[in-house]
Each structure stands twice: as structure tokens, then as C-alpha cells.
Image 1 (cartoon, rainbow, N blue to C red):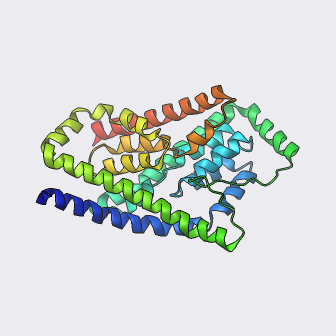
Image 2 (image 1 turned 90 degrees about the horizontal axis):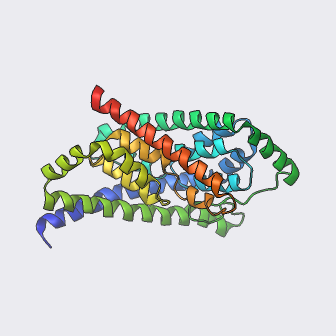
Image 3 (image 1 turned 135 degrees about the vertical axis):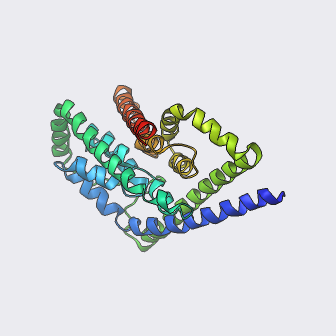
Length: 301
């Protein structure tokens, strides 16, 4: 193996290992609260948009799945669902915080969360205002079904209610470990490929290409963000941290990145029109947010 390639490999492995440790600790901690958060969100009608957007900011991908499942069962409104999807960042937060190479970019997690919270809340209440008749339908439905307990699903499709010791061990340790290993693999591959690209093509040429196509970056990021997998948030976050896309493009892509939430939403094939409306609003929100912030970056800074 070429010495330079070996160096890129080892650097990628080191950076990925740091993020793996950080992600694992966070996921283990949050696994103990996942069930309680899901139940509180489901039964708090008045504050559902606020709770949904707030919980969506927590660095895990299971909550968008919970929201999509509850929406399919008519337990939450379309505005609340969109608020959760917009706020969800999957692995972005731990990847930002685990970036030890550039401490300045760690601080960018604050405006990232602030923008996603504000946009998510604004869209949630605006959409529910337009679809205000649907809110009464949600309440009527829950009165009919007597608010029976829902078995909530985690990001990998497993139940997050584990009563037995074995179930709790799986929920609090095994699933966080397996998910963290997946994130480690994604981050390593992206870092390694980007490092190889810089080595063989040349850093100057790569930067020139990205600079030339910067006006398409928000659109590219939003398209990637729609990939129903936690790998998409890893790609967007890593590209920003590596200097591949501007902050606005990063925010736009992460605003539409709902992990497996969209996949769960489209499992309900009976209401294709409703699903397409959710997707269209999400796409427009991500694109507008991405370009507004990017224009601000280009012409103000």
C-alpha cells in the first residue's frame, strides 16, 4: 500500500474511532429515556409540535420513526410530523461534537440546532393552521380508540419497550452498540474516500470544483438528505466538516433528513397524496432554508 494512502487510512480510522466512542456514549444514555419521550409526545396534544421539535433535536434516529408510525395511526397531526422530521438530525450532532480537528466547527452545532428548532416549529404550526380541521380528527380518533398503548419502534425497527432484563439489555446496550458500529463504518468510508480524492485529484482542484458548483450545493445536499438511511446525515455532516459544502447546504440537507421516518411513512400506501404532500413541504422547507442561509454566507460574509 502506498505510504500516503496508508496515512489517509490511519487518519480516517482514528477520526472514525473518536466519533464511534462519542456516539456510543450518547446513544447508551438516550436509550434509557427513549420510551418515556415517545409516550409523552404521543399523549400531549396541545404541546405536540413543541415536544416533537424538541425531541427531534436529540441525536438519535428513532424518534422520526416513532413520529411517522404515530402519524400513520392518526395519533399526531401533519404539522407535528413535519416538525419532527425537520428537527431530526440523526448522527449530525455527535459527528459535529466529535470533530476534534476543527474546534471552531464544533460551535456551529449551536446555530444548526437553533435554525432547525425555529424552522421546525414555524412549519409545524403553519401547516397545522392550514389543516386545522385535521386536529379535531386526531382527537376524535383517540377518543374512539381509547388511547391504547402503542408499541413504539426504534430506528432499526425494534420495539423500544423492553420489560424483561434481556429486553432492557438489548435496548440500552446492544442496539446502541450496533448502531454506533454502523455510524463508525459510514464515517470511516466517507473520510477515507474524501482523503483519497484529495490525494489523487489534488486538493486545489477539488476545492476549485466545489467552489465552482457552490450554487448547486444546497440542492445536492437536500437530495442526499432524502435518502432514508442514517448514512445520509453522516455524508452531509462529514462533507461540511471536510469543507465540501457550505453551512447553508448542510442545514438544508439536514432539515429534510428524517432517517427512516419517510420509509415508515410510505409504508402506508393507502394515502399516497398525503405522503406526497408531506414530502413536498419537507423538500421546499429544506431547499428554501438551505439557499437563504447560503445566500447570506455568499454575500454577507
